[in-house]
Length: 454
Image (spheres, rainbow, N blue to C red):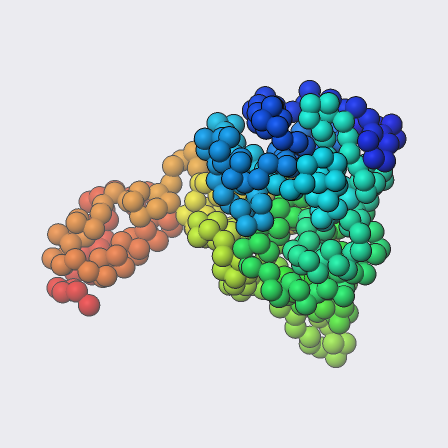
């Protein structure tokens, strides 16, 4: 989709843009409201995206109809924010958010746009003409890729401090330049972040992390003091770098690793957290610094952040696996057993994510061509291992818990699981041992004296 040339629009009632880009299920709602005697406008992110040349995802409407009138007109309405005059109309193609602005005519929609956060969101398109309403110069700001608030920046941010994070998200996702007045107001409004529900913070941060300009957004948040509020673990890493004489900047390396990661949330989160466990030691007469990466410590730090953000448990577990098993340098020395242990710890579903994380990590630092060659060789070795179908899980063993209990005359209990885990380690070392009779002989030789559970 090509962006509209915003130079052709006027400040208030501007270019006749039409409604050809609006999907039918949205137009049907607008038509029904209009023919029922109400004004209705297309507003919000859909217009911003359309004028930026992107395919709109979310469709929002503003209307003079009250929530009760909307609920009377449409069979499936969800009163998500009815106290603020907002409902959602459910359609087969997705929910449409509709907000009431009260007074009919231009006065009502102008008041609605005057309450919006940023000028690029304060645009409206009339129905049925499809004519642009732009009272705050949002079209001009879009043309200059500039993020400004509607009215006084400090007042707008204090109304809803989440707008601070939204500004960072708009920088991370769209690459907008944030107006200096907004950045200055952010620094004066940081205390408001403490009162934001953690779920709202999480949702904005996850959208930001998936942006094309994520490193710029994090650096802006650091300079304005926002990072210290929402992700102090990463901000502390930056402060350690400033005190350090080590030329390797782990903070910036982290940002570039996220930037170079594929647009998969669990990979980007793992990239963000993978160096939180880095330790610095100083030794020698020259006070030389060494940095070591403790993947287990990084995984613990990652869990603390994700738990604080109340993220889904499956996503937490996936990210922790990626961080805990982050592939180090010098894998050429790995034997087959060490490689199989990595595959067992990660599992086939996360394997590609782990390799992509390792690649992003390498190209984001002082990467030598040899390091990438090493990673490619590791990828080839992993492919060979996976084709051989190694017993990566206890369920892949040639015997089970019942076999262990019968062979050793044991009752059900924790000891059976411990023995199965030991068998699994044997088989990871030597896959050829994964034969039922061979394994029974081996456990009888090692555990034959055990006659009862611990």
